Length: 357
Ligand code: F0G
Image (cartoon, rainbow, N blue to C red; front, side, top):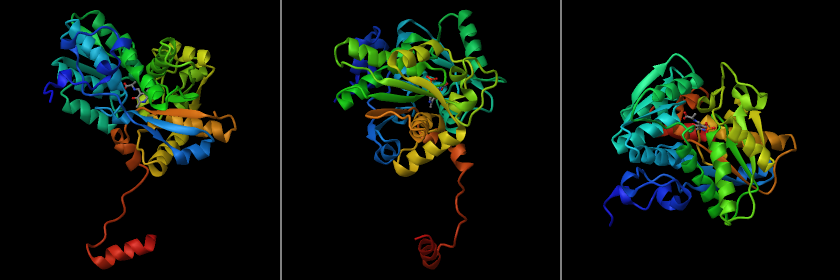
């Protein structure tokens, strides 16, 4: 048995090294990210009139897709001799950065909007020992401040998706989808916040084709939340709002990548309402057994909306579920209540079961 976790053959760097920037073995920081399941969603397929698969990125080590990019960004930060890293975050980037930084023995500053981080994510970066900087501002302000901070600091790496290493790592999800299906899907549906992930998937599908491994690329459908939809409106939003806190972003840093992906693939960027997002999250949990956080359901919400309006895609569709539902317990608890307790007797339990049978 190989006892060194750092040389384990798991993780996206080992799996797709030839497609990634150069990283010396000694700098590789991995927690075994990637190789997430592609789950056929038969019940929702019937509703949307296409064959739907879910790429469940909530099953990465810190329970979101961020880990794919973070392994590359952190490894390269180590290789470059950095001693600390910083990120702005709506929660998941901070959870991922703090875990990978812990492993790399690097200090990790996370700049987060006060009161806007889902509980599960805050618990993660607290557990991993991040240095938490809460600001009285939103994600967009946090990103600007983080970018400015590194200009004046030596040895500190910015690990947001404006760091191209993040995009390189995240594109591996597109490779996995192609490998698992045997070819690219006809359409990919994905939530859009800061727009790094749609940029990364498009890069991945394009490179897979350029490498001669496929002869097509999917149509890219990006979905923003209605109250945070700068790419749909065509201008930045000062005060973005949505229940999907992960994508509460008014000035996406990778807007050009997202617009290019939509345009070049013949796809589009549209928006979905908070109610549509929560309905999709609930359908995924109750009909497919897959629990994702609200933002992650935006892609499926978009597919359901397009199908209702008779303009949905056909063929094979992959929806990216970007983060696990356990990240954000409060959104569920605010909508459904636990039942009142009953006595611990057979009669009471049997009576309860009969009444709801
Ligand atoms: N889904 C989840 C669960 C996210 O956490 C994010 C982004 C997105 C979708 C959107 O991805 O920004 O690449 O378009 N979360 C970032 C964060 C902003 O700080 O964790 P994107």
